[in-house]
Image: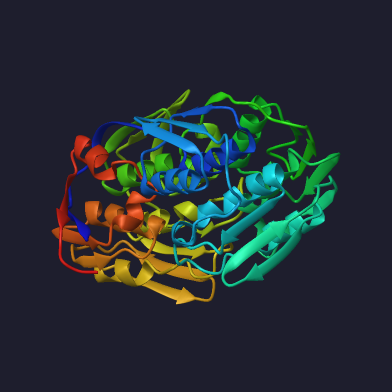
Length: 422
């Protein structure tokens, strides 16, 4: 097992380049299954989730190459059964189901795994497939879907916590090769959904409305290969901005998409963080005293749940009381007990965390529970006095490319070590 050793209290300084968006790369890689022609995807982050997806595509029969930041896939001959041991380790792998159903009219995929951050059922995915005409069953831990043909229809994909991002992606991919017109209502509006739609359109699909709650897909008979570059990772950009603010440093963030980050940038500004924007470049400046703010996570374009933990780490440093309310995942507060080990004063009340900030943090051993919680603990460790050891960092490697290397270039004292343990 690997851990990070962080000697905190050093302001970050310098420039950091943002990698491609992991949450855009996974469904786009899955979409290559919709054609038997070669596809080339650029600016792909070298993170473990992407490497898992490469293995999943290869297990389905695709030829996959991953060099640098470029993935090349040719799914000339594929089979509809996805490897159980691979899919169960990563939730994003469920997005191969839509392409398999669209191209082969049948798919067998195990129920997905991933971070333990609360219930994330795939019922809306299955609802969408059934609306397109598929027969769907869950047997022995597998989802099995089949159809003689897929027919376009109107599909409502709203759920308890709003729209489903992966569900929208999955149904949209299946519908590209369906007969007729499919209209997805209450579709997810995230930039990653827009990026997938743009990729599919570059392959010859006919999709309009992506980025709005209504997406229309006119089915086509076949799709072709394409070269494509994915969008920057808005969550990674937000994480480095918060890390800079937490250490009262000055960091220039390049290659980002600030237009995808309005809610985060607005809340950081409200919290007293100074951020200058010049085109795609963001510079976080040293600030005075931080201010307590209230944060509620919401579907895009609201404050992203994937930045909630990092923002909480920052607000432990802001004098006063901040209230963070989680509206997307009910169990996404597992980092609270670990932040408390560093001296944070946080109480949980239902879907809200009450942060009594302004007390200095001090280093301690902590345990990462999921991807974004890991990032929060790293940020807290950078701001804390003394040494922090973050264990189980395989979580953070799922979604951040070389985070320790990038932080060291900014002056952070962070090292990756091997330790004994599960």
